[in-house]
Length: 589
Image (tube, rainbow, N blue to C red; front, top):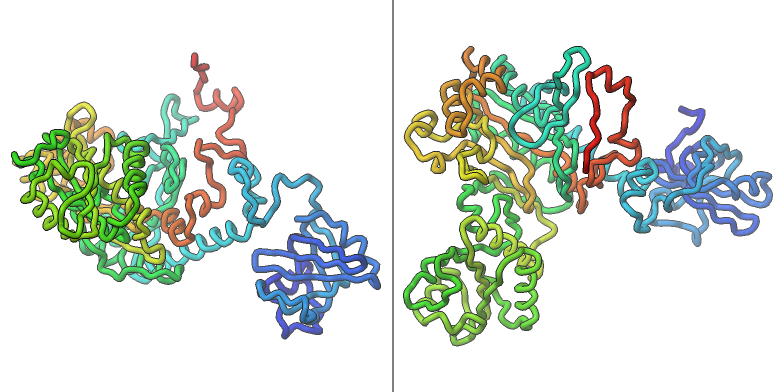
């Protein structure tokens, strides 16, 4: 260690004045003041200023070291003069007078962009030279935060008696969920492994094996498109499973882990647990989303029946579901505010329009549709939305499903434009009681969420209820409008499993073929079990205040699922393809 350094660049203090020390790091800046040369040396712990003067024979050498070269510096620590103190860095009261400086790794190529500055740099350049991008203090801090959060999550789970177990990376392809990443087999011609979309089946099989409490910092692989809060290719989750556990048992384990993590690694207020439990149906009605941002106080209210009244002559709303959002104390906003919201609804949300009404001091309405609403219906709208003079009502009229999405988008945008969202709060909730099934694009019954979930009411519900009325023991944890995790009480009964898949159009033979391990294992006395899997990347994105998930991943793929630094995906040789029995045919596109 002392060959290169005795201290890091964040260690040197006034207590070291007069001592001979060594530091090592990158040359961040050089300031040649004519016979007096200052260099800022940076490592991952901080920055230390080093200096040499005309009396030294290394002035010329030091002043010509290429920026961002790796160097080692030996010298004596001295106190800075009053006019050179830098209170912005930990070592700002001291400097090192250079006795010897060595170049350990010389920069010989031109820098593609300025390193460790606030200069805007194209993302493709940043990702191609990610090793340089990671020298940036802000990005480096995100990766350090990531490391500490993962370590803390491990400690929290171990504290609660969970055992960390690694599950396979090479597994079988799953017919459910996103697209798999496939890996051809060399030994078994024509067969493929798949990278796991999640350790779902393995962790359930661990419960069947008798491991009572499992967790893993699990890598997951899904061939899906990127979003600001979703990395393409791979992501990590805190994967958890428990035997002899109910939904509430899972909540009682995970809530303190999430709360303690956000409390420890953020200065923001964290809403205390137990977190609110909101049924899916209620969330869609009140917030227009199953990922509601509870920092936004605006609530959506269904007023369809008001506009179905024969007294209301607004034909544009007839035969549609009508939702309204009451924004308080905004009637004095200029007309441009309301027109701007209408433009947003039409251009960004693809809505047909956005009606609005201001409530005047005499409780009358003012706005484009005011003349269509009689007094009784006006008073009912005011009462139903808990409104008063000075408030404004926004209306969305659409067919089922679309009305929920539009209402949610309008609610979110109103909250932002009115400054209602407290950026210094982490607000969590559970979304519970998801539908077990939904209609797919062909009008057929399909799984709504996780096919391995236990239906509420068990086999009786599957046998006697309309599938679209069956709820599942499925739950998501949401923070500030971002889904952190999905989870469920698992279906551990073979008869319920067969029937659940049958309703979704899968035969018992299909279940046996695609989920053979679970199908067989459940015939050997599986315990009831439940689990959850909070997304680590998204948690760290929130904690770091990053706008894009790629800012908290050391080596992410770009939005097109490419690694520009390593050149992946890339072509391979014919010999490599021949080994795995693959021939590539050129597309006609």
